[in-house]
Structure formats: C-alpha cells, structure tokens
Length: 403
Ligand SMILES: Nc1nc2c(c(=O)[nH]1)N[C@H]1C(S)=C(S)[C@@H](COP(=O)(O)O)O[C@H]1N2
Ligand SMILES: [Mo]
Image 1: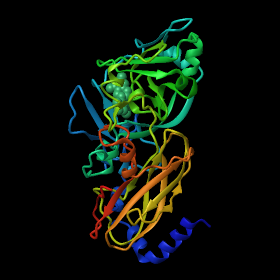
Image 2: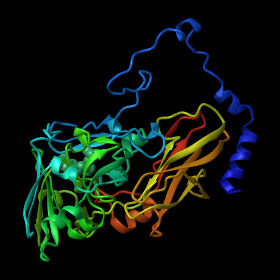
Image 3: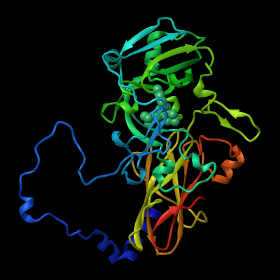
C-alpha cells in the first residue's frame, strides 16, 4: 500500500462525519411531477447544462490587435481542456478562413516546392496525440510578483488537447528538403502574419500540421483550418492559420523572435530561441479565490507538465515548503501533456500554505522562485516556471501565497 493511500484512509477515518456532510443531497431535487415531464428533444450539436457557467477569462489588456483569454484551470477535471475553454492568444484577432480556399505552401530550400489544399493534407498519413500548449508569457507576473486572484488569472495560458494532423516530417519528405535547409519559417494567414524560425530537427522529431482538436476540426481560435503544433515548445512558435513554410539556411530574425519572445538577462544580453517550456505544476483545487467549506477531508489536485517529456514525480507541501510528500499521478501520464495529480488531505482549520513542485523524466526539478531568479534575474517577461503556492486562511478562504 502506498504512503499516500494509507494517508487517505487515515484522513477518511479522522474526517468521519465530515465526509457524510459533504456528500449529503442538496434537497433541491425537482418535485416528482416535474421529473416525469417529457425532456428536451435531440439536438444537432451538444451544449453544456445551463447550470454550468465556467468560462475563459478575458485579459484586461484585450484589444482587437492584442487579445488573450485564460483557461479556468480551477474548474477542470482530468487532463483534457475542452476546446471551448482552450486559452486564446491572438496578435490580430481570429481570421475567418474558408477551408476550401486555404492552402499551405512549402518552398525555399526544397527539391519540389508544393502547395497543399486542406483536403490534400487530410489524405496524408495522420497521427493523434495529446499535448499541452502553453504561452511563454504564462505566469509572467511571477517575475515582478503581484498576488493573483485565481490560478486562471495567473496561470491560465496553458491548455491540453488531443491534436490530429500530419507529421511535418511527412510533408518535408514530400518536398525533399535540401541539406542546406537547416531552419524553416512558419507564417500565419492572420493580419499580423505571425512568423517564427524553427530548427529543422523539430520537424523531424514531433512537429505536426494539425487540423483536429479533441476529435473535431480545430476551433477558429486555435487556428482553423490548420496550425503548426510544436509539442512542448513555447505557444508562440505553434503558428496558427498556417499558410507558408519556407526552408532556409539560418533563422530569419522575424519580429516575433527579436523584439518579442526573447528573455532579457541581468547582464543586458537576451536569450533568443528559448523554445522549450520547462516543467511546471499548479495546485488547481484548492486555489486562490476558492473557499474551503470547513475543516476535514479535502482532495488537493492540480496539473503538472514538461516540454522535455513525461512528468515522473509531483510533490505537495502543506506547510509552506518545509516538508514534501508524493502526490498520486492520475493516468494517463503522457510526455508533453498535462498530468493530473491528487493528494488526500485533512485540513485542521488553521492557516496553511500549500505548494507543489514536479520532476520530469530528464530529472529536471521545478525550481523555487529564488533559484529561478538567481539563474535568470528579473528582467524577463517569459518562461516563469517557479514553484507556486496558495495560502488557506483560517476561515477557509484561499489567496495567493506569493512564495
Ligand atoms: N498566426 C498566429 N499564430 C499564433 C498567434 C497569433 O497571434 N497568430 N499567437 C501565438 C501565441 S503567442 C500563442 S501563445 C499561441 C496560442 O494558441 P491558442 O490561441 O490556440 O491558445 O498561438 C501562437 N500562434
Ligand atoms: Mo504566447
């Protein structure tokens, strides 16, 4: 029996009546007469219950030229983000593209430049894989700490979907990349013409041209009809509304890899092409903005992920980082995907600080804020992945612990 399982049983016994109280019916069942009325007929596209209200949270800075919304991580179950709640980040809004008219051109340092229609892409060998997508600006308030009202507000620029598409390696085989073609520039069909230079190795590894998201077509917000999907790499490099891939011998130094998406270091120099999203974990329940209904048993749960591969360990602290215990990883535990973790916990009713850290299959351990700042300074806007914590106050209200 694992430690956490034993702990769970102890917590249950100790909590006693607490559990029964939590599970008792609400007494709000419909009267018997209403329950026997005929229900609604079938519908051509599913909708959630009208009682469900969880939503993406739109950033305050949103304008038509620069918009983002955040996934309500505190309200999700399991490891898949419903497509309707996938975070959004648009540099010039969501274009309305007709899949019958949209094409993908692959040219530059290739033997056979080709233009693919969306229909032609769908004829090619496909794969479906579950990957997270995280904006490198996620959690950025950690660099110059401002307490966050919720996990969604502070960390909701990450989501996880089942993506379907053509491996980029298949497309690059079709066009025949010349030996000098060491990089490719991916360009979007939106007004900002988002463009990023990507090393060829990523194409030969796990990059996809995706047209499917959670079993149906990509949502317009996610790049309909096709997007580049670079598993484990900063969201910005997964160019949406993809229209062009140009094979080149060196990076193009586009706007989005020079003036933006670089990391200013303490010595005044900037890191460039920092594609990898390193390991991060978040407790999503309990988290800031929530209130515990009373002392006794509560499950601590959240998500952990790493751009380097699978999560191998998640540790939770209920004493502000003084001691740590292993959480249970809920299957499936997949490389470059959100991994759900759980930990049984008994809240005694006094103030505590909860924190979480994770380790990935390379042995990388998520750093503390002090360790991260020692390595990178505080001038960055991107790639903040330090340990996060929440303070449960004596009345059960949870706030950002700002650790
Ligand atoms: N064409 C295009 N691709 C884009 C963007 C964009 O504005 N235009 N935003 C990028 C950024 S910064 C991120 S974080 C991800 C967000 O993807 P999502 O909106 O599907 O969550 O898309 C990237 N690809
Ligand atoms: Mo982003």
